[in-house]
Length: 167
Image 1: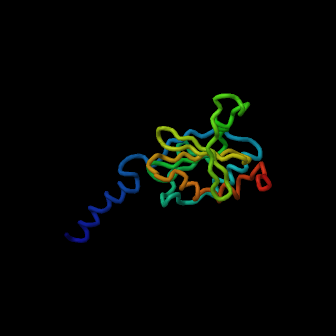
Image 2: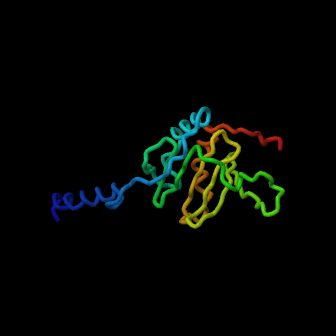
Image 3: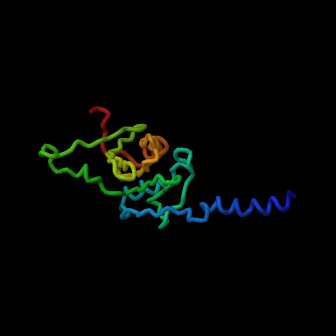
């Protein structure tokens, strides 16, 4: 095969790879209601501090484009900043019969509550100026692993609202 023919054959393959094999490289992500004040500032700062890779997967554009959302990989690990508290944390009286304990994990000084759902696990920060949510597809056998890649950015940009160091 002559070099010109090889290049002519490789160019379409390169274009297909860059565009996600013919599909859109955008991830549809519902942006949360924009937070106000300090929470909005924290979300903007977090967006600027997010890593280029999570679990070795590169950044994907979100649609609609928003500084409150981010995504990596395929299937996408999705982050949303400024979300409401998860239903499991909105219990008015935790002593009531039927109240389930809240599952949580701490990663690099950031506490995340989590809930499993059919598609994977949804993690939401607690004790932070803005709630940050990460949805991790069930493809990942260790669903909390992607939190390691973003926890430092969350800790630096979304201030804690409760000091648990003396608890």
